[in-house]
Image (cartoon, rainbow, N blue to C red; front, top):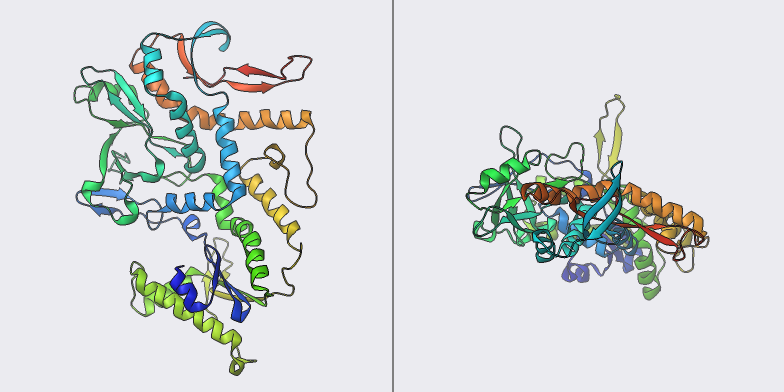
Length: 454
């Protein structure tokens, strides 16, 4: 909400979608999880002759997601932790000297040769950090492969940010043929603002690299985690924190307490407003949802009406009529979705009343993101406890094992390049991990593994 609208309402924005109205001693809450809840029928965005599959209802879901991550310290810490667990000790270029049943038992680092030049030229450690970050957040990465200028080998591999990447609409065979890259999606870009790149068939990548070698065109390798029902952009399971409401609760409590204490105000009501309420008004008044100015004016008008209803003496003991929708289910039983709900609040936020709620919320978010809160810091709340060394070590090893699928997907493009460039079969890029152990087995308390490789 803009400052101008907040000023007109006499309100204070707490977090996105939550506004404090001091004169009415009321909180207005807009559901902020809509973008993550709905599965959209794909209506392609046409820019020139490009047909682009939008990422989210307004094609800006990655932007909304990154803002939400940045606004919440728990989610930000969990994203960093998951990325760092995947990264381990960072990629190394090694030559296998001995192995036993597929497990590397002896190796040495490679410090020369074409493989080493590729590794250093492309700064593979930085490349892997970039890929793992996008994979943890979006379950999608978009590595770009580029041929040698005067040859047919793959010379470079570059990270293309997921936030700026979009797919083309599938062809009749269900294939995605083009990748569109632009940092201007939020500004309705023209065709000149978009870079179009051919997409490799992930199941036939080496053969297609040979096929396109004569043209020496840039190519995108589609790397992603499987996500049922999402043919274009995968959705990490932990995004459920946005649709369940726990994310909003986590953001709201500290900022809400700060705003209330600053304004020396108790809260009497919380008004929950569904976006469907405003969409219905737009439809009745013939206003397009893309007309942001008109939509903001309607939202401002309706919020003023709520404030007047709650504060006006002439409205005492009167009834507010609220709209609701009926949602059918496969079982035949229908549920109701209220478009407006006013909830009285019995107590003020002046002490530590919501500390327990903060603790529960943090634990639920950590649970959804697969992070044991004790591994990244003490759990907030009254019952904060730390784990013993043995328990923490075992939890960390379990976490490493659980993140291997993400590391594997990020390593896949490098394995394709290794095969296409015909590297020495004993040379590989590996992602070693710390294996924490007891001091009687190793004086440092840790060892090193080389299990995940390309």
